[in-house]
Length: 129
Image (tube, rainbow, N blue to C red; front, side, top):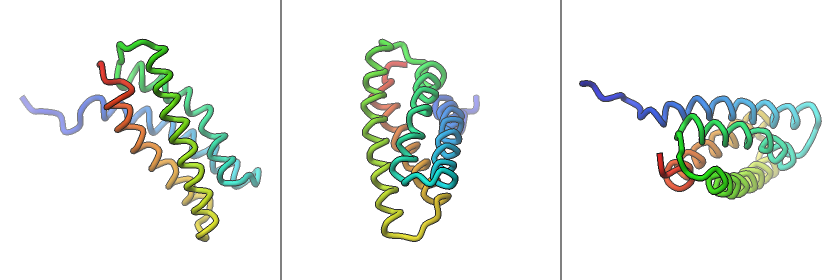
């Protein structure tokens, strides 16, 4: 029997991740481009609704976790708060030292946060699946 090229949870993570990343990207870009908010503020504001969508999707669909809802939510909140702050500070710094347009800043933030989130989620937040 042939083994799948991509583990099922990775494929599901990509689906949920693309949905939440698309939402994050759209909010972040719109706030930066049309509302003229700072890179830090737009990134942080975009994290809030994406947190809810991503947590429920990752817990219930991607990893199909059997861990306590309260425990996994606390871990997920901690990691996402750290990631949100780290990514927001990074794109604020990038916006100050470079002439990168808002589109590139949003793409960088989206990709970096997604990669970090997968590895931490799979190894620490939802280990029992």
